[in-house]
Length: 577
Image (cartoon, rainbow, N blue to C red; front, side, top):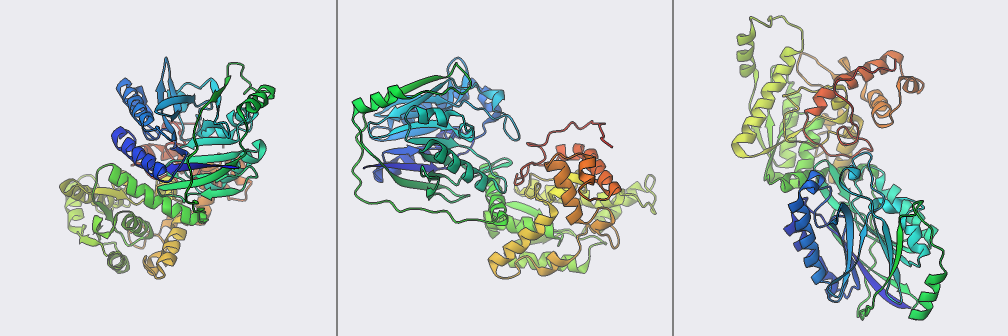
């Protein structure tokens, strides 16, 4: 048996930062060489960051990324480098280069281009038409990209038929809760089906609304985990794989007998590449790394922290400001911000009105003390009265409409944005998915800001996350009073959310059915929900599309979020009831 040492560099690339990403790649190449690795693998589009979206339409961007790839190839003097980039021939391809001896050995173009949910790869790329297997005399390996490995009869199967002992898959596979286990089960299935090792190198980090959770891994031909990287952090995973050495003539005979299956497409070309590589002498055994299993709630919390940190820092902001109402949503957002950025970089602002309860005011103070953040207090009653006095000719003093409620929220939004403008703070909004779904938010008010941390978090999960964070801290970091009191916007006397909305446990189940599962009215009603309640919720969701289009970007943590996943017309008269 000969040891083949492979390193998976699970890096956090920044979209468009070709120089910064390349420097990080070079650093990990050096690290791999120092660890006597024979191969180092980087994620999908590691050079450009993922997804680069319409930057791909800029010729200068594509050309610059190819030049960076060529620079990286020069470092492959004594190590195989596998790195994702954008290739341009007559068309544009999502590609991976394999290099050794300072030369390009092979370039593979992604064949299966995802065009669903958050993916738009058909908009940018052309599907590949060639599949290769590279022979190192004692090891045959094939390389493919992300979506390619999700197909049972995809490139991995052809690579196995062509003699591959190892499938290397580079990915930018985004997170939603439950995705890690789905991905792990799929990789195990591919390894067992093809009786090959699978090396899966995933991207990690936040990019706008997407979170990449890493979880890179080496899977045995039996489907078991040999070694795995943690989620939500950069990692360098090294494994030794054993292969039986066979002579070159035997290898060529085996290859000639293999029956090659096509991907239902006769245009796919199959090639075998022979590469003379001297495996390095391994002086030290590598330490096996096994990831810690996380619950869905822990996964989501870590995703929110990573997403907040990367959005703020990659966008060039130093500090953030959060409006603290004393409610659970703003308390959770402030806590996430502190975990992401440090207490010194989070500013809270309390803006009590005549309707704010003493408990809510004191809860905001207590939270800020627990988090050790600065708290600014600006009462809004006097400002509100000035507005009302100037509107008396148009809004009667005894008006019971929502104009006065929303005016309070918009005053707060103006104050938050004034401080944001003055000091360069990024304003974090605090609305959750349940509220955004039904429009229970004020446009240009509490929706005003730069980033919506819990925009894709249902209200029932907000409670679970808050309790989870307190368990982590082993005391009520988020005050227990905040968690236990009935949710209220406190924009009128004795207001409660349930005055306007169904109880959140009911609302969230209906929203999941309608928004995430795409069930129609009759299907939702059959689940046992009240007829009128279902109609009311559906109407609220449909009527609020215009609001959601004007909301800040926010972190995706569910299988279907508003914006990237769910795209409906603003003007839409269709009803199925």
